[in-house]
Image (cartoon, rainbow, N blue to C red; front, side, top):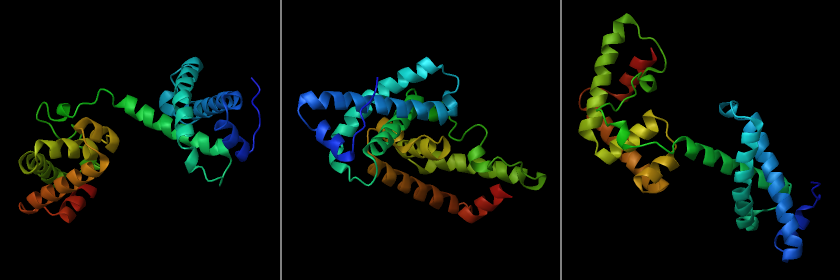
Amino acid sequence: MLMTERTNEQWIAELTGPPLVQTPALEDLRQRLQRGIFYYLSRERSDLAHLATQELNQIAEDLAQDATLRVIANLDSFRGDSRFTTWATKIAVRLAISDLRRARYKDFSLDGLTAEGDTLPATNDAFLNNTIPNPENATERADVLVKIERALEEALTDRQRQALSAVALQGVPLEIVAERLGTNRNALYKLLHDARRKLRLHLESQGLSTDYMLKLFQD
Protein backbone atom coordinates (compact mmCIF):
# COMPACT_ATOMS: atom_id res chain seq x y z
CA MET A 1 0.00 0.00 0.00
CA LEU A 2 1.40 3.38 -1.04
CA MET A 3 1.89 5.70 1.93
CA THR A 4 1.33 9.42 1.64
CA GLU A 5 4.28 11.74 2.22
CA ARG A 6 3.53 14.46 4.75
CA THR A 7 5.33 17.36 6.33
CA ASN A 8 5.63 17.52 10.10
CA GLU A 9 2.79 20.01 10.22
CA GLN A 10 0.59 17.79 8.07
CA TRP A 11 1.21 14.78 10.28
CA ILE A 12 0.16 16.66 13.41
CA ALA A 13 -2.84 18.26 11.75
CA GLU A 14 -4.15 15.00 10.30
CA LEU A 15 -3.48 12.85 13.36
CA THR A 16 -5.45 15.32 15.48
CA GLY A 17 -8.06 16.06 12.83
CA PRO A 18 -11.57 14.70 12.18
CA PRO A 19 -12.01 10.96 11.56
CA LEU A 20 -12.10 11.37 7.77
CA VAL A 21 -8.49 12.58 7.68
CA GLN A 22 -7.27 11.00 10.92
CA THR A 23 -8.05 7.39 9.97
CA PRO A 24 -5.81 7.18 6.86
CA ALA A 25 -3.05 9.08 8.69
CA LEU A 26 -3.18 6.60 11.57
CA GLU A 27 -2.93 3.67 9.17
CA ASP A 28 0.01 5.26 7.38
CA LEU A 29 1.72 5.85 10.71
CA ARG A 30 1.09 2.28 11.85
CA GLN A 31 2.59 0.87 8.65
CA ARG A 32 5.66 3.10 8.91
CA LEU A 33 6.20 2.08 12.53
CA GLN A 34 5.76 -1.57 11.66
CA ARG A 35 8.41 -1.22 8.96
CA GLY A 36 10.78 0.55 11.36
CA ILE A 37 10.30 -2.07 14.07
CA PHE A 38 10.80 -4.90 11.59
CA TYR A 39 14.06 -3.32 10.43
CA TYR A 40 15.24 -3.11 14.04
CA LEU A 41 14.26 -6.70 14.81
CA SER A 42 15.83 -8.15 11.66
CA ARG A 43 18.99 -6.03 11.48
CA GLU A 44 19.85 -5.06 15.04
CA ARG A 45 18.78 -8.05 17.15
CA SER A 46 21.11 -11.00 16.63
CA ASP A 47 19.26 -12.84 19.41
CA LEU A 48 16.23 -13.04 17.10
CA ALA A 49 18.15 -14.37 14.08
CA HIS A 50 16.60 -17.81 14.56
CA LEU A 51 13.10 -16.45 13.86
CA ALA A 52 11.61 -16.62 10.38
CA THR A 53 10.75 -13.43 8.52
CA GLN A 54 7.05 -14.15 8.98
CA GLU A 55 7.50 -14.41 12.76
CA LEU A 56 9.47 -11.17 12.92
CA ASN A 57 6.84 -9.44 10.84
CA GLN A 58 4.12 -10.66 13.20
CA ILE A 59 6.02 -9.31 16.21
CA ALA A 60 6.52 -6.01 14.40
CA GLU A 61 2.84 -5.85 13.51
CA ASP A 62 1.77 -6.46 17.11
CA LEU A 63 4.21 -3.89 18.47
CA ALA A 64 3.23 -1.32 15.84
CA GLN A 65 -0.31 -1.22 17.21
CA ASP A 66 0.91 -0.28 20.68
CA ALA A 67 3.56 2.06 19.26
CA THR A 68 0.94 3.99 17.29
CA LEU A 69 -1.07 4.55 20.46
CA ARG A 70 2.10 5.60 22.30
CA VAL A 71 2.97 8.14 19.61
CA ILE A 72 -0.54 9.61 19.60
CA ALA A 73 -0.43 9.92 23.39
CA ASN A 74 2.87 11.83 23.13
CA LEU A 75 2.10 14.17 20.24
CA ASP A 76 2.37 17.18 22.55
CA SER A 77 6.04 16.36 23.21
CA PHE A 78 7.02 16.54 19.51
CA ARG A 79 9.11 19.68 19.03
CA GLY A 80 9.79 19.42 15.29
CA ASP A 81 13.58 19.09 15.68
CA SER A 82 13.54 16.11 13.32
CA ARG A 83 11.17 14.52 10.85
CA PHE A 84 7.98 13.38 12.53
CA THR A 85 8.40 9.84 11.23
CA THR A 86 11.94 9.67 12.60
CA TRP A 87 10.73 10.81 16.01
CA ALA A 88 7.82 8.36 15.96
CA THR A 89 10.03 5.45 14.90
CA LYS A 90 12.38 6.09 17.83
CA ILE A 91 9.43 5.81 20.17
CA ALA A 92 8.39 2.57 18.47
CA VAL A 93 11.87 1.04 18.73
CA ARG A 94 12.16 1.99 22.41
CA LEU A 95 8.81 0.29 22.98
CA ALA A 96 10.07 -2.80 21.13
CA ILE A 97 13.23 -2.91 23.25
CA SER A 98 11.20 -2.62 26.45
CA ASP A 99 8.70 -5.26 25.35
CA LEU A 100 11.39 -7.75 24.32
CA ARG A 101 13.27 -7.19 27.56
CA ARG A 102 10.10 -7.77 29.54
CA ALA A 103 9.38 -10.95 27.58
CA ARG A 104 12.89 -12.22 28.30
CA TYR A 105 12.32 -11.96 32.04
CA LYS A 106 8.65 -12.91 32.11
CA ASP A 107 9.40 -16.08 34.09
CA PHE A 108 12.04 -14.45 36.28
CA SER A 109 11.51 -15.01 39.98
CA LEU A 110 13.23 -13.10 42.76
CA ASP A 111 12.58 -16.00 45.12
CA GLY A 112 14.50 -18.26 42.77
CA LEU A 113 17.70 -16.30 43.32
CA THR A 114 18.18 -17.72 46.79
CA ALA A 115 15.92 -20.75 46.62
CA GLU A 116 18.82 -23.13 47.11
CA GLY A 117 20.95 -20.89 49.27
CA ASP A 118 23.10 -19.68 46.37
CA THR A 119 23.16 -15.92 46.01
CA LEU A 120 26.25 -15.58 43.84
CA PRO A 121 26.22 -16.94 40.28
CA ALA A 122 27.73 -20.40 40.05
CA THR A 123 30.61 -19.15 37.91
CA ASN A 124 31.13 -15.97 39.97
CA ASP A 125 31.89 -14.14 36.71
CA ALA A 126 30.56 -10.92 38.19
CA PHE A 127 33.47 -10.95 40.63
CA LEU A 128 36.12 -12.80 38.67
CA ASN A 129 35.73 -10.57 35.62
CA ASN A 130 36.26 -13.69 33.47
CA THR A 131 39.91 -13.93 34.53
CA ILE A 132 41.82 -16.98 35.66
CA PRO A 133 43.31 -16.43 39.11
CA ASN A 134 46.99 -16.92 39.77
CA PRO A 135 47.76 -19.95 41.94
CA GLU A 136 48.98 -17.54 44.60
CA ASN A 137 45.62 -15.83 45.05
CA ALA A 138 43.15 -18.54 43.98
CA THR A 139 42.62 -19.62 47.58
CA GLU A 140 42.38 -16.02 48.73
CA ARG A 141 39.73 -15.30 46.13
CA ALA A 142 37.70 -18.34 47.12
CA ASP A 143 37.84 -17.27 50.77
CA VAL A 144 36.68 -13.74 49.94
CA LEU A 145 33.80 -15.05 47.83
CA VAL A 146 32.63 -17.15 50.76
CA LYS A 147 32.73 -14.05 52.99
CA ILE A 148 30.80 -12.01 50.40
CA GLU A 149 28.18 -14.76 50.18
CA ARG A 150 27.90 -14.83 53.96
CA ALA A 151 27.70 -11.03 54.11
CA LEU A 152 24.82 -11.00 51.66
CA GLU A 153 22.94 -13.37 53.92
CA GLU A 154 23.82 -11.75 57.24
CA ALA A 155 23.90 -8.02 56.54
CA LEU A 156 20.91 -7.58 54.23
CA THR A 157 17.19 -8.05 54.53
CA ASP A 158 15.56 -10.54 52.17
CA ARG A 159 14.24 -7.68 50.04
CA GLN A 160 17.64 -5.97 49.85
CA ARG A 161 19.37 -9.24 49.01
CA GLN A 162 16.89 -10.10 46.29
CA ALA A 163 17.16 -6.66 44.69
CA LEU A 164 20.96 -6.50 44.83
CA SER A 165 21.39 -10.06 43.57
CA ALA A 166 18.99 -9.48 40.69
CA VAL A 167 20.48 -6.16 39.54
CA ALA A 168 24.18 -6.52 40.36
CA LEU A 169 24.72 -10.25 39.91
CA GLN A 170 22.08 -11.38 37.43
CA GLY A 171 21.88 -8.21 35.31
CA VAL A 172 18.10 -8.00 35.46
CA PRO A 173 16.82 -4.57 34.28
CA LEU A 174 15.73 -2.19 37.03
CA GLU A 175 12.17 -1.89 35.77
CA ILE A 176 11.71 -5.67 35.91
CA VAL A 177 13.05 -5.91 39.46
CA ALA A 178 10.91 -2.95 40.55
CA GLU A 179 7.85 -4.61 39.06
CA ARG A 180 8.54 -7.94 40.79
CA LEU A 181 9.05 -6.16 44.10
CA GLY A 182 5.88 -4.14 43.66
CA THR A 183 7.72 -0.81 43.84
CA ASN A 184 9.01 1.96 41.58
CA ARG A 185 12.46 2.86 40.25
CA ASN A 186 13.11 5.63 42.78
CA ALA A 187 12.30 3.36 45.71
CA LEU A 188 14.42 0.61 44.17
CA TYR A 189 17.37 3.00 43.80
CA LYS A 190 17.19 3.76 47.53
CA LEU A 191 16.84 0.07 48.38
CA LEU A 192 19.95 -0.74 46.33
CA HIS A 193 21.88 2.20 47.78
CA ASP A 194 21.10 1.08 51.33
CA ALA A 195 21.94 -2.54 50.50
CA ARG A 196 25.33 -1.64 49.00
CA ARG A 197 26.17 0.59 51.97
CA LYS A 198 25.28 -2.12 54.50
CA LEU A 199 27.20 -4.74 52.53
CA ARG A 200 30.27 -2.53 52.28
CA LEU A 201 30.27 -1.72 56.00
CA HIS A 202 29.80 -5.39 56.89
CA LEU A 203 32.72 -6.44 54.69
CA GLU A 204 34.93 -3.61 55.95
CA SER A 205 34.28 -4.76 59.51
CA GLN A 206 35.93 -8.03 58.46
CA GLY A 207 38.92 -6.25 56.94
CA LEU A 208 37.69 -6.49 53.34
CA SER A 209 37.92 -3.03 51.81
CA THR A 210 36.54 -2.23 48.36
CA ASP A 211 40.01 -1.40 47.05
CA TYR A 212 41.41 -4.69 48.32
CA MET A 213 38.66 -6.76 46.66
CA LEU A 214 38.89 -4.90 43.36
CA LYS A 215 42.65 -5.45 43.23
CA LEU A 216 42.27 -9.11 44.20
CA PHE A 217 39.82 -9.92 41.43
CA GLN A 218 41.43 -7.80 38.75
CA ASP A 219 44.93 -9.20 39.07
